[in-house]
Image 1 (cartoon, one colour):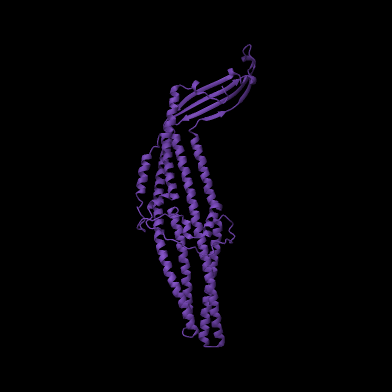
Image 2 (cartoon, one colour):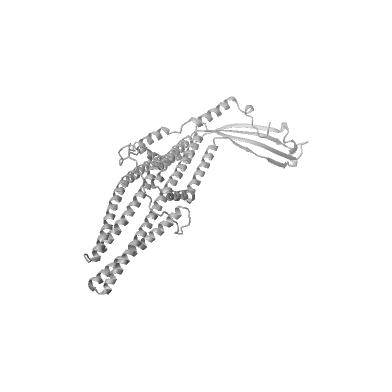
Length: 478
């Protein structure tokens, strides 16, 4: 017999073989205790979902090709790709997935026999008054054993633990997908916020230059001595407006600097404040398809992760209940033993043994009962967490759907307001140059035009950020 061979025919009876076969079949086919309760609980929670989103009336005609395509910006897509590649938080989530894979392998390893091989050598001497005549006082013993130990998963406890580990692994994978989607959405929002801040900076710089030109004209009038009291008032008002605009410019530069550093962190780089970002705000080339089905929400990775965590908890509870049942273990040993190293591999130095034992826990001070209650409490907690997360997801989708319509109408109104305000500014400037109106009217018209353009930029950016929020709430594209 080979040193690395364990021959069952000479060691196991047919009844033991049948017991092993039953154990193997049972561990793979027996469902976890409480599986019907899980199905009932999940159906009750899924009944909370509406058939259609309330903000949209009918079915979509065709599916979207990808949510980043909504923004029609290759530069924005490049930023998202860079963030997914280099962001350390996402890399940490990927490492957690690898850990979960390893834990699944560890949990499944208990379903297989444990095989070990070893070698031992000992030398001893018997006392003189205990020696038998004709026997040497020195005793050598060399052993080369090959051991097998296997707990038969007759009740499916180990299988439950393996299923729990697998569900936890799937939850980790879904959490990774959720982190990647969240990172993409955060990158889009931050890049849009930076583009908004830089657009507002350019607008404010133009306004500062306009204010300075107006102030220069008023100071020349004051120097010429034409109506000095009125000219002095006009100059003072113009200087106040210029200082306020310069203050606004510095505030917006600070916002842009802070946002640029935040974007660099998302991209996995040092926050040096030098990221280029986007040159302008992207545009939305399409509206949201009408009639989005609520089933889209079930693909949200964080919701799917919560569902997998409930499944894992149920399997752990089942394993805790089965810990009350007796455990059955087979052990065997095969190898060589001899008093002489030279005879260790001789045929007559072979040894083998086999044993089976069953263990039934009788008393552990309530530890097993507490373990079942602990896992049931975790199951109930995760079930309510899943319900809360699902309701929050519904709220996020409905809010984003409604906000898209509001922000679209707001941007359209602000576009009209900006056009009229610019026209009013030009008219006020012409009338002021002709002496038909005072400087207050001119400054007020200029401020209105500036405010309208600023509000329009912010509304456009808000709609873009809301679109990213909607895709995040839906778990991806439409």
